[in-house]
Image (cartoon, rainbow, N blue to C red; front, side, top):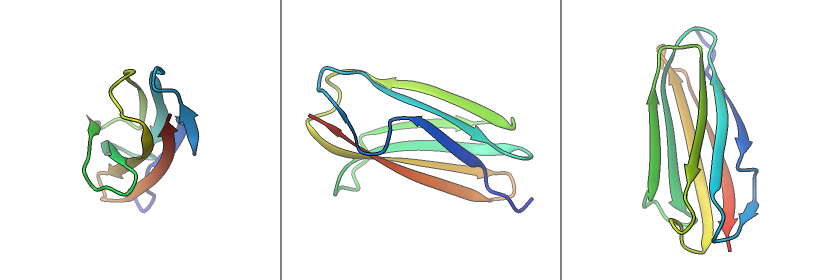
Length: 103
């Protein structure tokens, strides 16, 4: 297997803006041609490497559906980077970064 898992992010959209009172929906599908191994979601304030939220899935399925919510008030006002990484059992890695703002 030489193909990395495909990551399809439906939410948040790139550079989306949320009000501080909004819930932030994180919705995506991760698709692999054989077997997935890991999916990591990590949230960082823009310009910082201090992780403030994370979500992890260990799966041997071909497809993983992720539907998570960050509750209102959990995030301070500012810009954020959501880093998504997925790896299969043959160590093929794919990653995506989505940026959004809380105002």
